[in-house]
Length: 254
Length: 260
Image (cartoon, rainbow over all chains, first blue to last red):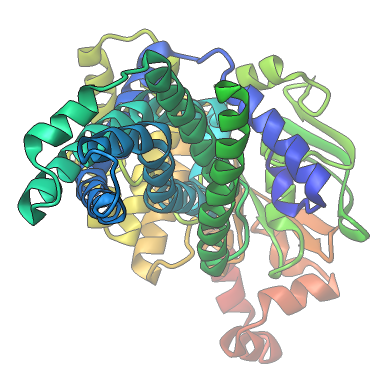
């Protein structure tokens, strides 16, 4: 079972092992109550633990977007309430899901990877296997379930905070009044964009969690390897989020 | 009883185990000894199923573990307990939750029954009033004792201990050795301990398997250990200057005392 610690291979080997890991992580749990408890713990870690950083960053992204759009529109004939519309659309379609998930790839991805890597190095995963626990299912399944649930919620919080940040910044700087900004927000509301945002969030959440878990679960060697695995987790998750962003934009907006 | 038959294990081109066969008897403390890199840990991992032997069989009471599918292996695993070198306690759980984990996962016992069982085994390993502590708040010896408590909480038929004395002071090592010995006799389990601690060998060695460069070089018990003429075993036993002097000076009385 622990043979993997000695196995190395090329990209195809890793892709195959990753796919098998994901498949096994959704296998039937030994005891649903234990898995549910672990899922709740992960929802708290991934979701609640990331709310503040998401709010902080989203607020300023919304604020900066507003100031920059307003600056670009300031000498044009385009009405200023369009700033609200553009900030809303860009937050919902791109900035909230993508930027939030890139931040989560750094925060949550490195955390998950180092947690599993440490469990591997300190033989905690071996201890679970000796007991007869399906380690992939017990350790990774709840993390994936928690991420798929919590990341969309974080992205909704990010979008609302970003738009709110834009409104406050526009009003404070005097570029666009809160009334004009609100008019822009309410203009041409497309429900499909919310669906796209939530789809992106769920897919990105799945990718960043599964890639980070893969890196940590199959880490071996010394503590230096855990650091390297965490770095790989963040870099690969971020790249895959960006690639998936393009693919989803292409598929969902066509 | 656990039997290994012609077990070989290779990693790439490196042969780590070369055709090992032996029988580990029930109700006894069976030791695997040898220098670092001799293949002790790999053999133990092959027996418990963390590694799959390249060739050979591992039989738990005549049931071939290697050939089993995952469901059959999991049934055997419910009968195993293992103490890991570093304790392998779950960092995010308290002592009580660590020990209770196998009960939570695999039994339908009520919470009060589970708590009673946990308190019973914690008392057995002399760890009272530690239920709410986290592993990081425990000393090395306490972590090992918690590991033993977790290993025996499901009443296993087979107990495996990987270097139980590593990182412990001599006095705590003796306490852990005695605990393993007592538990083996009390619960009538088959215990396999992997060690290079000579004090453990002399105290606990009901049956001793000596490995050298991946091969079985000698087997016997703590009494016959000192009568062996196996060169590698003698070099291993008399590695310390004190014991070398004892041997050279033919302090047979001292050695006889040690072997008792």
